[in-house]
Length: 462
Ligand SMILES: [Zn+2]
Image (cartoon, rainbow, N blue to C red; front, side, top):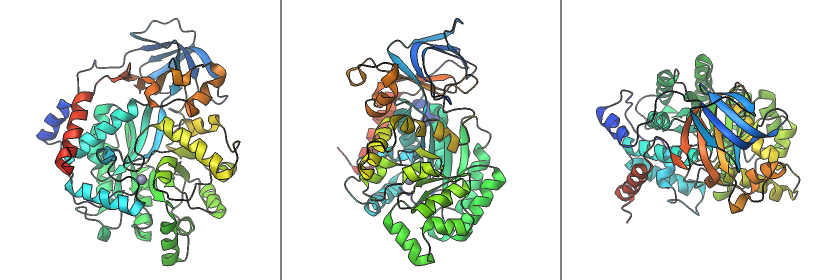
């Protein structure tokens, strides 16, 4: 879904009320990186051979140091008997603060959902955005996601929540044509300021997010691309999500959106385009030729009945990098990447009348190493290999839905049987952020209570 054009002030200094407000949601944790030993698990490495090992994972200074039978002692030991260790999942399209309007626009088409989203935007405050983003981070970390890509206005509030949650994120300030925007100042300038502010952060990587061809002119696309090149950051956008978007663009320019973006020289290898449901084989080849990546959002597309199904088999044939996203909690309505993996697998089987269209291993690749590749992080995350950053999830398979389990069926269970609630431990950059299903440093009860209060304040819900 697209984000709105709400009016807001640009405030980069942390006001006192925000600082005090933030403290309410945090609980003290021990500083620094502790060594961690994940002991006796089934380890789905996602290394180039796609090996599944039985043994230990040793983490030190934020990195995976040793795999197999580890004899080194660690400051924290997690017993992984009956558990499965996977690379943290990577969600490449989200608008996380919209957790607050989860369930407010069901069973409607995209345009009606957008109108309800704009009503929400008119009422919401910066503090609300922070709480919505914290709630979304909590949900993602508790369901095995360690990295996500997000796009929104007030993205600095999302960045604050991400920092507090300890997640890895790629964040984009929403850019559209200035005359269509109600942002104070030029959206591109706001985006540039956001990039400058957050460029040096360890776990947050800013990017340029263009809302879509329906609200961005050729000039905006061109300036957005120049900004990304000058700052050496990634590009993200909504693209060919609905048939209406494609037909309207064709009426305006004589070309389909991807053809037009190819002609104006916007497509490139730093771009990941979300949705791409209504595309031709010719357009797939244009994406391939330019190295443009795709964030496939099957749950959102199906819920909004967008109709077009991203042609993943043809994208694979043409070596387009495909990744998975949940999209917004208003159009999904959850942020569980296990659910997204299963829907991805089922959607394409149903669409092609072919159960063999692609297998569980391929789907799991999209949510891990392929996501890392699109974010230019494949040398650091996306698989469990010595030397990589320790972004990991431990899943408890000793429950009915994933029993019986052994090495040979573990990847099948990850895609077809598991869900986010199997997650017992989540580690991001070598820090345990979720342990035994509970957040280590966010006050879950306070965040949930505040989110419910905001719902009452904004929507007068009982
Ligand atoms: Zn979206």
